[in-house]
Length: 176
Image (cartoon, rainbow, N blue to C red; front, top):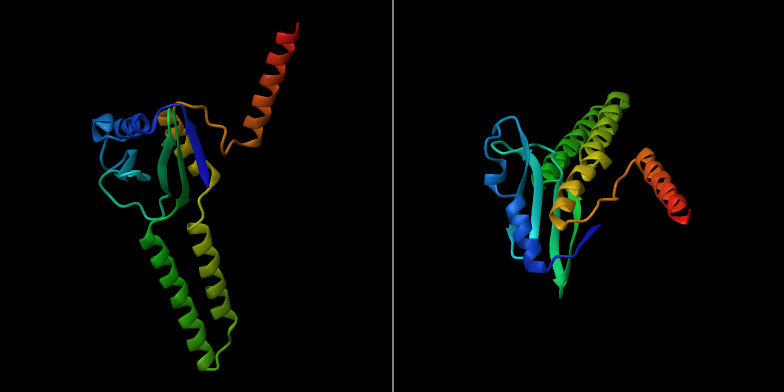
């Protein structure tokens, strides 16, 4: 679960999210080639997808979350998933691999090829449904622009070491 805090009130955060994900912000982009953030909101519930505006991207990451807040502070809490159709399609492919395996077994054929097909279908299905760190980083960077806070989530090791080194240098210069 990802939690991004903000110093804005809940209403301000909702209006900033609406502003940052409006179609006018991406005006002039090529609808078939440029990847933009498309967002839907139903009350406090939000859904954010980075895709081409005119087509459905199969296996694109989807951030599903909720904007909550009390007083002058608010936060966006949510998880990264895939589209429901992506889960259904992957389940159908894996089910087809099981059918091929059971058909080969019923005919008394060698199960080596059927087992390899089944294993490959399961591994590829899991990899397609997995959200990678770089993808999560792009989404959280975009949402941190909305919340107005720095993003420290999903950093690479090199970026973490670089930030620690800069922090140590700043502490050393402050002590002098």
